[in-house]
Length: 285
Image (cartoon, rainbow, N blue to C red; front, side, top):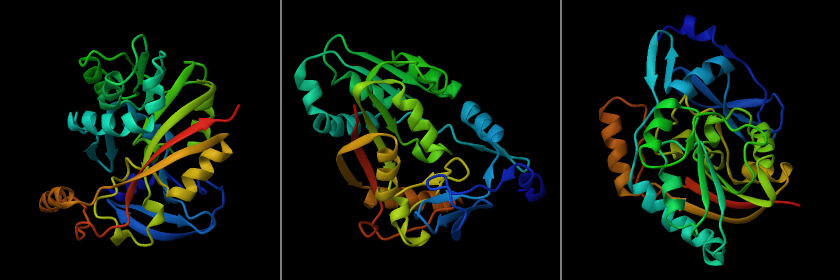
């Protein structure tokens, strides 16, 4: 990787959560550094890619870094549909049982797995829409019969009962501003379903048994930081579920990645404190 070319596309930033500029090194991957904010403990990439580089990568699914290309388009994973069905069926049981139509928007819909799960749960007459800025993913999701808008979420696009924000927190440089846009797309008393990892709850990089996904991933929170973001945006947290992800199957996948030369840290199965956080929160009236 040509680091001279890379450095021209980087800029130093303050903490995306609390705004302070005091931090300590925490981890590295593919020439990028993750630091921990001394004030609020958030983890974030610093220096970060400039916003125009991030935008191109988000829309095209390709990072051009120092003359190399990193493909971050991933692929559709059908088993995610069953996973989100099982989680959402319980966490939003009152919505499904009410029988009332629901306006549900999935932001960063990707290949549409979350929206497919909601489609199988929602009462008749519900309106389900996905928003996905990456053209390739949006096109693939439409092939599943989903309504997908190929764009970023903008203020006033929707009047939703629920907005789901699944595994995109780490891709968003300024989550405060993003949540302000989210609130402008919710009905009074509307809710969000947010899923992200608790990486910032881990003391050391070695405690996370996987790759960080840099520079596609930019910010890593823990439970305290997520609660802070939501509270400051006007949300009350209703429920948080924690999902272990360091099972034997995950370990086997990490071994394969390691053999392929990916920057994976191998850990003992069922030993990590890393969890996926599944959060239901309601906008205060």
